[in-house]
Image 1 (cartoon, rainbow, N blue to C red):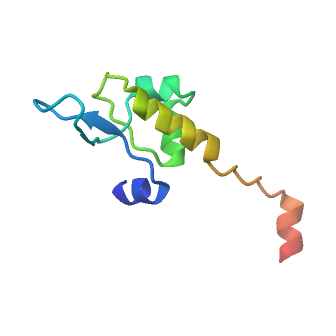
Image 2 (image 1 turned 90 degrees about the vertical axis):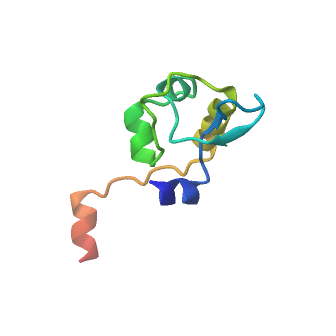
Length: 90
């Protein structure tokens, strides 16, 4: 999963524990609440290769913004080939 997040350039950030509140570190994945606010569900996020941290319940606005930007820029899926199209190519 680490390679996928690096290639997609999408990684969640969480607050550092016991440090200055503005300090952030890399997180394990996006929370369900962040996915919901960005308009994604867990199945869609897994299909896109996004990591999900089911233990987190916090919702950070900067992660929601990252997900919304990713959702707007994500490449559109290719259409499935019909059986006739597959036969013509061979």
